Structure formats: structure tokens, C-alpha cells
Amino acid sequence: METTVSVEQVSRAFGKKTVLSGVSLHMEKGQIYGLIGPSGAGKTTLVKMMVGMDKPDQGTIEVLRTPMPSLSMLQQIGYMAQSDALYNELTGEENLRFFASMFKMGKTEQKQRIAYAAKLVNLTDELEKKVSAYSGGMKRRLSLAIALLHNPPILILDEPTVGIDPELRQSIWAELIRLKGTEQKTIIITTHVMDEAEKCDVLAMVREGRILASGTPLQLKQQYDAENLEDVFLRAGGKES
Amino acid sequence: MRIRALVLRIFQQLLRDKRTLAMLFLAPLLVLSLMYYLFNHTGNASDAKIGAVNLNPAIVELLKEKGMDITTYDQASKDVVVNDNLDAMMEWRDNTLHLILKNNDPSQSKALQMTVSQAVAGLADTAQKLGNPAAAPQITVKTDYVYGDADTTFFDTLSPILIGFFVFFFVFLISGIGLLRERTTGTLERLMSTPVRRGEVITGYLAGYGIFALLQTVIVVLFATLVLGIHLEGSLWLVLLTNILLAFVALSLGILLSTFAASEFQMVQFIPIVIIPQVFFAGIFPLNHMAEWIQIIARIMPLYYGADALKSVMYKGMGFGDIALDLVVLVCFAALFIGLNILALKKYRKL
Ligand SMILES: Nc1ncnc2c1ncn2[C@@H]1O[C@H](COP(=O)(O)OP(=O)(O)O)[C@@H](O)[C@H]1O
Ligand SMILES: [Mg+2]
Image (cartoon, rainbow over the protein chains, first blue to last red):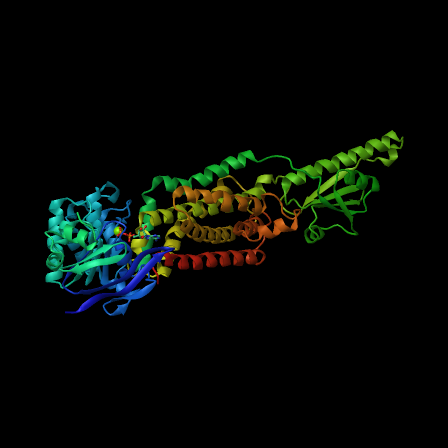
């Protein structure tokens, strides 16, 4: 297996507040990694450092064996931020085209990728509308489509399915599973929803800036002798439900 | 081309925002017109610096009583007025009082003229009372102007400053708020998660908003000169050039200050700190009679240089050589702010 993202003993503090301490993670291609933990655990801080938008105070992060931050690696990463950062005055299609222009790709490829990404998130018929007229779920979907535009080998998605209805969530997960399978992408997802965690290949449970436990969902359940992941989380954190 | 995509996006956004467009293009014209009809008043001549040549001591005495600062010269000319920074010169020659007004501030000129004619009339009165009508011939006053003419109003000197100010203010506000919105909605952060370079981002914004600033400048200047008939002594191109540089300073400063604002309201709070003082120091009140430290403060304000260049071209009819220094300073301000902007983007991505 080929390691695509490696996080080595990473710590990060904002002022006096330590947000991450000694986090290490190794991710391989063709797998879905779930970072699961309550809000404020430090998930967003960690994935932002993987993208290179922030720097660790201690430790190193490598993506495709390149130390981050690295400008050229950004072409290899599809990042979906936690907030829907979209241009509301523009239509869905204009948003897609704008972000596509920031990446290296030809005109025809751009057209194809925009059509593909829009279809994937079920927005093909809504592309002409201004984003200000979109619902919360539609914005989330458009945001996901933008992350997929340049066909990156690594996808980093920060709470991608928040506000998306169950049916579409199913289809998005189906596509993510296809992407990791046939296209051998590395997919990193943060979530605080336990039933999504079940679908990940490897899980890391994050709380207060530390990895409490990591492994496949099955391993974790066996290790902590738990019925479900929720119990694993509580037991790993030293608390009983 | 990433920069082209950035520019295109700013165009799409601004063109769909009708209110911002109106603020950018109509508000300056409206305010300029209002000011045009508002400003016509008489100034104060009591602290004027006067050069006197061969002047009747009685008149000198009278003018000194009014508080004026009188210096005696051998010869009167417009050059002396400009070089010695006098407000006016008076010469008694051929039974005529020749008055040379610098007319830097037309309202002061009007007041000066009034004072002089009062003094002359007073002199005639005194002579008559002393029973010496022969010593009181009909004194005629001939007035000459260094800048402008008798029709010059206060607004003619104010308008170059106002034009510069409007360009500065509206460009500052719109680019600042535009960028702030990108910061608060997270689009700027998202943009920085693509392989775009920080320099490209800043160039894109400068070009995108810059084109609107350019259009605004052209409209404001043409409206001021063609519709309101504001005095334009020098070249229109120099006026445009100065305003464009001023717009770039405002643009880069607006983008920079939006880094330090957390909301649109906080952006507006910069106006009394950053914008209003510049108006006062831009020459609406003549600075050369003021304390040294005030003049030093003026020199750190971009609008001071912009207004000086605009006044020189529009009112005094000066050429490129005379305003080159002002323009260089504006370029330096813009370069400084642009550099700081590129650094400030590190907040969103550490390279
Ligand atoms: N730029 C920042 N400055 C100060 N504190 C921050 C900053 N970013 C995140 N934090 C803090 O770090 C902690 C973890 O935040 P975050 O990574 O967003 O958590 P999560 O994504 O798991 O909900 C929170 O307590 C948050 O307040
Ligand atoms: Mg988060």
C-alpha cells in the first residue's frame, strides 16, 4: 500500500490554547479515512494543515511525500471547507467555472469536469440559478462539486454531508466509495455523525486535540468490546455511557 | 489565466449589485453637484501675507491694523508672489494701486480685495477731512491674478480636492467591503486552498476593482469639467492619471484594512479614522499657515499628494514635471500597500 498523507507528531496552539497535541496519522490510497469527534475537537484545524493553509507548531505533514505547505500540492488536493464558501451573486455554473479556472486544466477538460461534478451532486438542472437562491443542502452539494472539479488524487472533506438529505447523502457516499475504489483516491472526511463513521475504512477518534483511538470500525469495536462506535468513542475517552 | 478569471468574477459580482454600482457611479456626481451649489462664500483676509512696493504708509498702517503681515519689496511681480509664498502684492505706480492676488484661495482673495478698497476709501475720507482734497485723487485699483481670474470661486479650488476625495473614498469603501465579504463568507480562504499564488490574487483584485475605479474616475472628471463647468486649466490626461493612482492607493488600502475588520460595520468605522482626516489635510484648509507638526502629519496622507497634484493641474495649469513628485509618492504608497496585502494573505495560507 502506498502512503499518500502522513501526519507526524503534529501540535498546534492558538495563543495559549493547545488545539492539537502530538497527532500522528498515516493514510493510504484507495481508502476513506474518517476523523470523528465532537465539535471543537480540532478536526478542522488538522485538515487545514493537511491542505497547507495552516502550519503545525511542531511536527511535519507530508502529502504525496512532499512536505506541506506546498503550492504545487494544492493541485493534487480537493478541499471542501466546513463553511459553504460560495459567491452568492454568481450562478452555480459561474462558481464552478471560477474555481475550475484556478486549477491547471484545458478548456474541454474544464467543461467535462464541471458537467461531471454537477451531475454527481445532482445540480445539473440548477446550475443557471444564482447561489443566493440555493437551499442550504444545495450549497453544500455545490461546495462538494467544487472540491471534485480538478480530479485530485486526494480529497479532504470537512463535514461534507451536513444539511444534505438522507437520500442524497446515500448517493454521495456511493460515489465516494466508487472514487476510492476504481479511481484509487485517498479520501479524508471529518464528521461528528457516527453512522457515517461506519462507512469509513479507517477511523481516528479525535477529542481535545488528541487521537483517542484509531483503526477500522471493526477493530475498534472489538478492541473496546463495544456494540457500536458511539460506545467505542465514550469508552476510549474514559467515560461510560 | 487565473487573473482573468478573478477579474471576470469581480465584474460579474459588481455588475449584479445595482446598489453598489449606483454608489460607485452616481453618488459622487450627486454630492459633487450639491457641493457646487453650496460653496460660494467670502473668506477671511486678516492673516494674509502681503508684499508692498512704494505704498503709502497710511495704507500700510491701515492694513496692519487689520492684522495683515506686510513686507516691503522693491519690485512687484507674480514670480515674487509665488516664490515668497505671499497671498498678494500691492504696488503704487502711475497713480494706480496695482493689486496682484495669488488667488490660491478665491474666498480669501475676495476678502482681500474688499479690505483694500475699504482702506483706499478710508484714506480718501481722511484726506478730505483734513481739508486737503488735492491729496485725495480718485484712486483706482487694478487687480491681477496669479491663478484663476475674477470669476474664480472657492469651488474652483475645492473641486480638484473633492474629485480626488470622491475617487479615494468610494473606491476605498467598495473594495474594502467587497474583500471583507470574501473574508467573512470564507470564499477568500477557499480561494487560497487552490494553487493560485498570493500575488495573482492581489493582481486580480487590483485589476478587477481597478477597472471600475478607472471608469468612475473618468465619469467624475468628465462630469465635473463638462457638466458643472469646473475650471480645468491643465491637461485632462494628467487629471485622469492622478486620479487613477489615487484610486489604486485607495484600492490597496481598502483591501489591506479589511484584514483588520471583522464586519462591514467595523469597515465603516475606519472612515472617521482613515478617510476624514485626509480630507482636512488635503488642502481644503490651506496648510502653509499652520503649525509645523500639522504640515508633517499631512505628509503621511496619500490624499495630500493627490489633492496637491490635482489642484496644480486643474487650477494652476501646471504640467507633468510639476506634479511628478506627487505622483511618485502615490506610486510608493500603492506599492507599499500592495506589498503588505500580499503578506497579509499569509493569514489564509502559509505560503
Ligand atoms: N484561528 C484560530 N484562532 C484561535 N482559536 C482557534 C482558531 N481556529 C480554531 N480554534 C480553536 O481550536 C479549537 C478546535 O477547532 P476546530 O479545529 O474548528 O474544531 P472542529 O473542527 O473539530 O470542530 C476550537 O476550540 C477553536 O475555538
Ligand atoms: Mg470543524
